[in-house]
Length: 294
Image 1 (cartoon, rainbow, N blue to C red):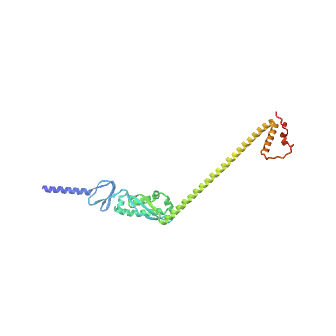
Image 2 (cartoon, rainbow, N blue to C red):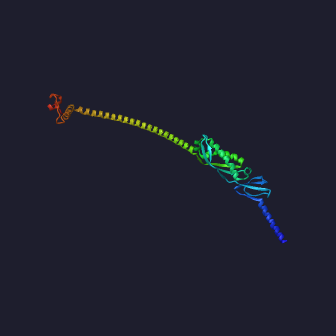
Image 3 (cartoon, rainbow, N blue to C red):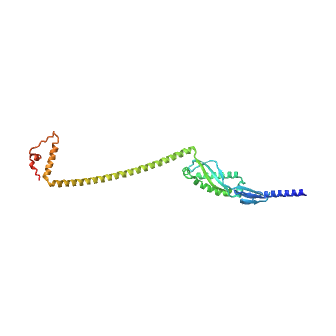
C-alpha cells in the first residue's frame, strides 16, 4: 500500500511538472510572441511576462524585437545621367507586428532578410536614378536616405510587419572610368573658381591702386598749391621788406649794388671788362664823393 501511494505521489508530481512546463511560458523583455492553435494565430502581440497556454493544442512562437542590422552587398546603380555608382549600405530594422511577421516569414529571420534586401535595393536604385552625380556627391548621405527609409517603412510594416528604422550609406564608389571623368570635372570646376577669384582679386587690386594713385595726385596737387602759395607769400613779404629797406636810403642801395657788381665782374684774375671810362658803371670808382652818406 505504501509503495503504491508513493508511486501515485511521484506520478502526480511528474504530471504536474509536465503540465506546468507545457502550460506556462515566459516572454522575455526583448521579445514579443504569438499564440497558435494548430498553426492558426489565436492571440497576437503577447507582451513580456509569465503566460499560460493549453498544452498540446496550443503553441507559442517568440520573436526578437530588438533592432537588427541587415548589411547589404555593394550594389551598382545608375544615376540620372546614366553614370554608374557602387553603393555599400546597411539597414536597421525591427519586428513591430509579430502576427504579420509570422504570417509573412514563418518567424524565420533569414527569410525576413531575403525579403527585405530586394525592397531596399529597388528603393535605392530609384533614389539614385532620380539624382545626377553632382547631387549625389554634394548632398549629405543622411538626407539622401530619408526618402527611401520613409517609403520602405510604410511598405514593409504592412507587408512584413517590420519597421525600417534607418538606411545608411557606408560608402559610395565610382567605377574607374567614371572616377576619372568626375575627378577631371571637379578639377576643371575648381580651376574655374580659382580663375574667378583671381580675376576678382585683380579687379579689386586695380581699383585700390587707382584710388591710391588718384589720392596721391590730389595730395601732390594740394601740396604743390600750398607750396606755391607759401612761396608767393614769402617772396611778397621779402620784396616788401627789401622795398622798405631800400626806400630808407636809395643812394646807399645804388652804391651797394655797384659794389656787388664790381665784385662779381672782377672775381677772377683774368677777368677783363671793356667799357667806356665815362660809363655810369665806374661812377663810384671815379668819384667816391658821389656817395652822399648821412
